[in-house]
Image (tube, rainbow, N blue to C red; front, side, top):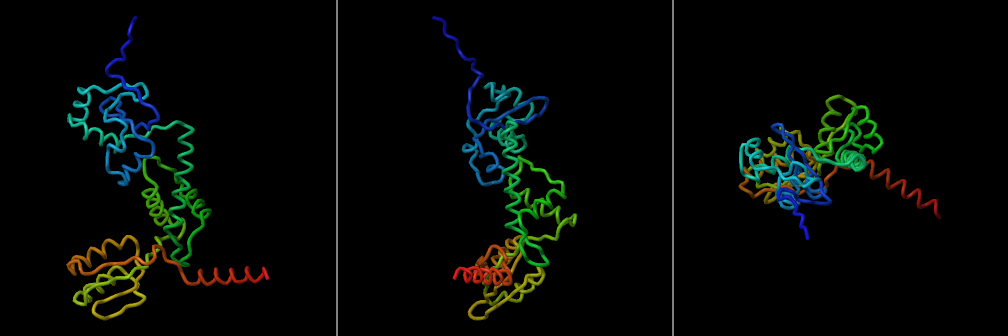
Length: 265
């Protein structure tokens, strides 16, 4: 009986997502679990073992051909496999079939639109944009989906470009927060809030200072870091609403609901 041995540099894998990096005239691939690579790139997943199906570098995943260590050392200037794997994961291109790619682009596009709708308002009216309005703006911008970047980072890039090119008036919806701090830092705190153009709608002075304010999401970390540093961790910020909603919208919505209900009787 003749036994046919599989070459030692062949490893067969199934149901994988492949990340490919071309460097130094060579092609290197790693085999990942589906959907995990984008989570890793965005920081959601930090354990590389949860991303990789196997801690090997291949020249061709589909054929199971493992890259030789001599090539890896020459091209990456290291023999540390973890460093090599991380570079391929970070800089490589995710390989998908044409049908799957088309499906991913469509879903990612919808997620980007939904994210922008959730994050932004018209700065003049303070009203949210509809999905169709954002889709038209993306078309005017000439936007195309990048499957190698996560949804949030692409949404933030789009918002930036829409503002720069004045395609539509748009800004991040503000957060409604409660700012609490010791009385000893009030003067410095108010100067900081004024510097950031923070709108305080209500404030109280008792044993501590409390203020209700609307802030840009991008200012949240600046304010909390300032309060913690100046108050030695005795102050804090409490998020009340993640998205600013103007009272007029709620009022109109309530009236419409009452009218519609009254028609039933």
